[in-house]
Length: 584
Image 1: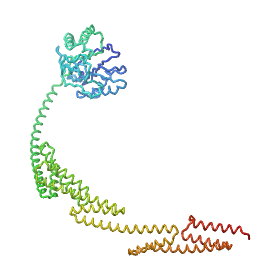
Image 2: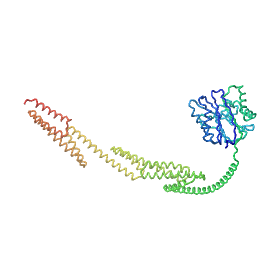
Image 3: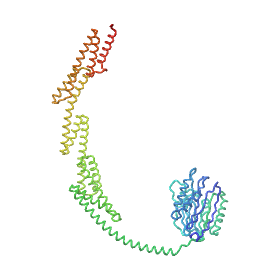
Image 4: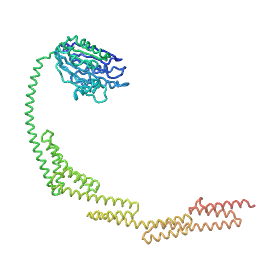
């Protein structure tokens, strides 16, 4: 409907100039309710991709998807993303100006140095500014401070690496008989604004392009090299007339909305008054609990102080974020949280002390001491000084407990390893600390540990002595020195008897050794008989005696690997050999 009831006559001209490819591009998309015009100019050297065309087509594509005055920046940033995405071989750089209209108003956005004019009644109704160093210098220092060549030094352009910030205008009413004019740098750098206005004053709408071209061609006399440029003229013959009835309806709606807002403001004022009264009451209750907490703290009753701050903490949690007494609520909330944290840490430390978790207790008391500085350091309150002193005492006490406990644990470790002298040394250091603590139960426990460690040390000395004698006994028995082994065994039994200990194992060892002594004597007798039999040429008797010796050695645990056993085997072999050599 808007497009049918309006008329915008489009006329444009593009010149390639001395460039190998066209560097400018103009296109537009008219929709039913909106239209979008876009002009772009390339500043890169890529001959494979026309970045100006790509930019314009990207803007128009984005516009067709979601036509709106609000999305101008989004259209240009979409085109920027497409330019960056296609910068594969070479970096693409493009300036662009976009105009969106609903056939009643316009809004334009620019990024670079393409100028946009709105002319009406033989005057400039609007002139856009370029985003170039030339424009910046003209504004900051005056036109004489920047050479005209700086009009191609773009501060914003599609394809740049930094964040893109295009300029977007406000909505502008579109007047009938007015003309929108786009000019790229290749044209406006040769024709100034006055010359463009002269061409507009002396022409009809359909002749504006040709008049500007004539002026442009005159500049060739001074500079025959013509760069690519585009010139686009949009003559507004008729705009869409919005329904006045709708405007009246909007006005009535605005009046009703103002009345509703006024009523809501009154209601809000009443609600705010109620909230302020409620917040004042809550703040008074919290301050009362804080005073009670300080009073209990002054008496050293930290459990009751903790209860007061527990209740106060619940009340601060119920304070509403209603923009009333913001500073007071924030300050009291922080203060109550700090003091609650202080007494909670003290309570936790006491619980850990009761459970003998000294390291956790130290951590809790240290946390309480840190919280004290937040809760009381800035306040001139007597309880703060008391809390500080008591926390210092608690920390000193728990450090003594930790030191004593660590020494006891080290002593117990040495005791497990049967290093009793080292254990007693650490127990002694722990006792020195415990004496200063006044903990009678711990001192009694430590004295018991010292007594037990001393007893174990003495028992260990005796045990080591007996263990060494047993080792000598076993070595003598292994060397078949049974007489010496028996002496060692009888000595061990005598030591146990002196200690009043009956050791069955030693008695069994004695019986075993005595048995081996008897067996050893029997074996010696059979060896003598065997050798006598050999001398008398009674070889069968000799072999039987030698075999008896081997059986006795087996009962004595003398195996084939022992020299004695091998010697008897050799005697048997030699006896058999002698018997076989003698004639029958």
